[in-house]
Image 1: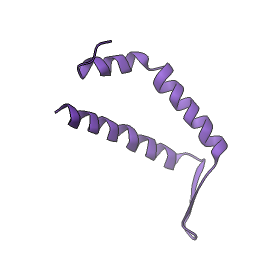
Image 2: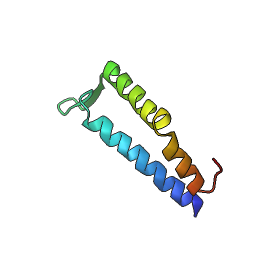
Image 3: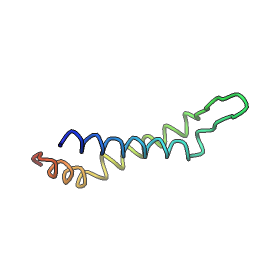
Length: 73
């Protein structure tokens, strides 16, 4: 049961990240050539901001998640 919950959580996180990357202006898709272009400068700012928000700004939330699935915080 625990593996199913973790897999569901990971799917939620990864699909959310994929949707954000597709929706943000630093990724563009050219339908004529079928090429996905990513602006690395804009993407790096997004990655740093996301990492800070999820790790630095959300430690309380992560401790609650860990405690809920049986970990000790």
